[in-house]
Length: 294
Image (cartoon, rainbow, N blue to C red):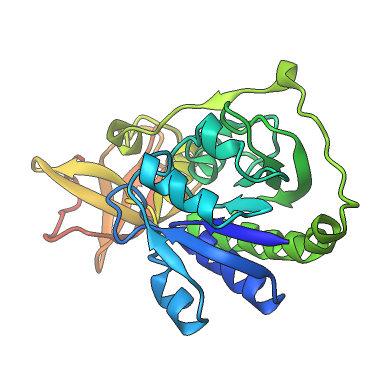
């Protein structure tokens, strides 16, 4: 089975490493030299060079020269994992087995953008790891493999990313032999129960201290590294927040949201809409005094 691989993020690298470990026949790897869109961007060329794999850079996966190159490699199947771009019909029709994509959610629910961020920001209790055959619509093709993943209260973007990746690597190991011998089965998605998550905006990351402590906690853990971070403004400066704890108490019910209750060596206790938030890691460059407002 001749595999052409497309990928541009850390997840892509981990999957490619697994395919190399499984001695898959990878005819070429398409990646990007640089990217301003992906916080977890990885240039796969170094991995390819180390493993004597042919690779090619691209800017637009659907442009003529890229399509021409892919056709010349005569892939049986294309693996496309970690690409923030829809694949066009011409490319989809090149490999006889199709183009296999990936989405870290329980398809058909939660199609669309930023699935890890939205799952955490919305406080979901579970998500998924789904491999599916691509069509012209985003995340709507037939499912090859899907696993549920529990989201714990303590999970953040980094830990959930790692959970999802670990499950996906096991799925790869299980379905590669089925693809190679033609015994795999797929499941059609039910569009009636589907929904699409929208693209996140910068404004979505702003902390409003009138929010509940749980909402603020979810927002911060959703946007922590490798993502750009939730933030608040202090003296017209944007302060990125990487780690907070909920402090559930009614002791400060008479205080207004956004008031700094304590500053313990840089650890801030802030009144939220209901309870309090303890900020343990942020990019604050100056001291905030107790009694100030954010």
